[in-house]
Image 1 (cartoon, rainbow, N blue to C red):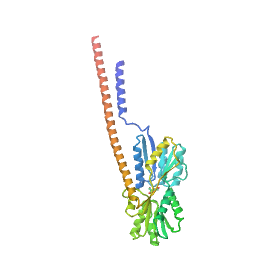
Image 2 (cartoon, rainbow, N blue to C red):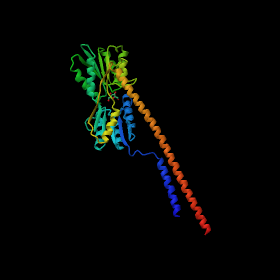
Image 3 (tube, protein in one colour):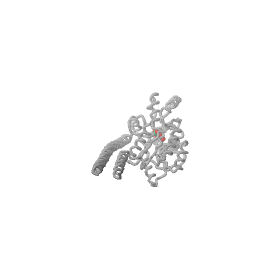
Image 4 (cartoon, helix red, strand yellow):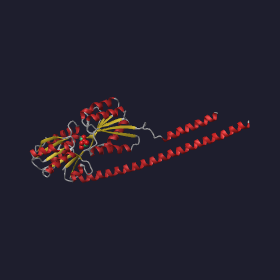
Length: 375
Ligand code: FRU
């Protein structure tokens, strides 16, 4: 009787072991990073997300959740609330606008969740750390390039701004004016408020040019709006009279570097996304390392002098990233095959053990029956 019970419990234990061996590892020990991205409809944002995902895939213990705010301020606030409710280990935020997101960032911080703000800032310094290029410097660089590339006595400039209430738009404008105001030959003759997308400025720019086509230079706060303005000028036959400078300097066929090489833009100011640095910084914060409050990425001018060099460099970086991605993919594939095979081995071993236990039980039963018959 005791032996029968023993055999039964061995069988049950083996079946439990069998199931637990096949169930995937839970994410309990993983570091969970939540990223609230402002929007993902442009290449700059997509490249930022890709850099984050690539950096994350180098650390098997990190789980990255990306939420897309889709340009909707309320939605972004709700998404950060969701990341707080899910008790993420750290939250990274790239705000659509500075003011509305500030209270929920403070809330996360007060609840003990570190917050890393990237690219666009919140209204105050109540975050763990900030990462991004210095947008005042970006504006100054654009102004310096306009002045350096001109021999005219008077340069009439139109400024095309990014979304009102987003810190890069405000800071790029401040830096730009700080510099051009020092030079008597540069005149900011008009400005247009955009929302970072070219559709937001094309009609306004057309109206401005119709009223007064006497313009020498356009400084747009990003390359998408700069190219949009160039399209308007081209349709009016003014593209050779006006020079255009943007910001971002993305590589790739639709990026600012190619626009400089194609003589659409006179120049662009590099504005790195900092995607990989953001993940590295998040890990340092979680490891309780001391990090600077403000982490500034470097920026530079890209014009006809260095566009080829920059393109080659970025092409090489992209190539290396693709190689890493392929290797990671191959590794993942190997890992899957290894775990499938080791699961299969465990199942076979468990089945063998069950068969063995049943065989022992049968032998025992035969002996028990014989004993009964004999007595
Ligand atoms: C991308 C973008 C960039 C710009 C940045 C400013 O969504 O519009 O073009 O440099 O945001 O935050």
